Amino acid sequence: MEEDSEKKEYVFDTSALISLGDIKVIGEVLKLAEIVVTPSIVKELEEFAKYDDEYGKASKEVLKYKDKFIVKNTEIKESIEYIQTTDNELYNLAKTQSSTLITDDIKFSRHVDGKIDTQFSTLFLTLLVSSGHLSKEKALELLEKLRGIRNWRNNIIYLATKEELEKL
Amino acid sequence: METEQFNIRMPKELVQDLDIISKLLKVNKSEWVKTKLAEEVHEEKNKLLMELSTLYAKGMIGKRKIEQLVGKDIADEMEFIKKKAIESAKKGIEIGRGLRKKGVRI
Image 1 (cartoon, rainbow over the protein chains, first blue to last red):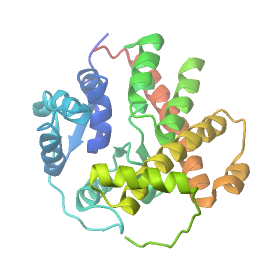
Image 2 (tube, helix red, strand yellow):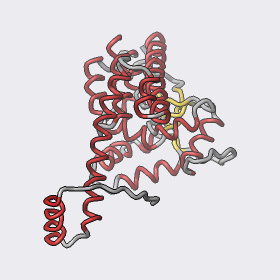
Image 3 (cartoon, rainbow over the protein chains, first blue to last red):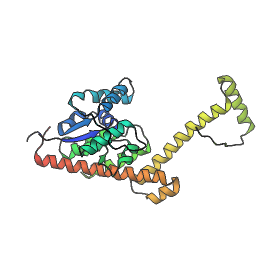
Image 4 (cartoon, rainbow over the protein chains, first blue to last red):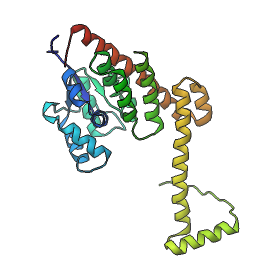
């Protein structure tokens, strides 16, 4: 078997990186995919990392891999109403390079849906299982952790992903 | 913040208890009630939406029922999240299988 020499690039926002950092799979993801961010995302993570709460801890975990990220500056050519500048940068970056945007921010995802391809970070859990790099049992365990703060939005993502994982 | 008048009649005893709290904590009675009510409403709303979202995610109730119970905005959001979560999971499986076929190791 050989390493993938042409890894696919995915544009990540802070929420998705924090989710994957929380369950400590950034290292595994980087072996299969390129993580593309803007300088604003690195700054946001560094801000979160100043605190010792759950977000702070996850951000510190993500920042361990900062040197392996592809950091790209981007110009906002098309601005979407009701979303922040940071998110508009990511939208433009994903659109320019025809990449999938990985975000767990529901509002952001809904605003750009249909304009670019967006997916939740849970894509990488099923990807790691189906590529044979993570057991289904471990993925279900990580998914439970990813559920994190129990709110109804995360609950739907958790239950829908769990159902798909259990089919594998 | 936009506000709306909401009047309620309370038992005298409860009002007296509120007076005691207000004096001991040196807080405004209305403000204290407002804060406590907000906490309770937030918690109860989340609890009920958790139950509703579980039923919806498991396919035990449909979007129309959600819409009847809590309105179109939440029903639309639930529909979007469920659809996107299934899509993400399936896409991950497809990409992962492709990598496996190519013999990609990590």
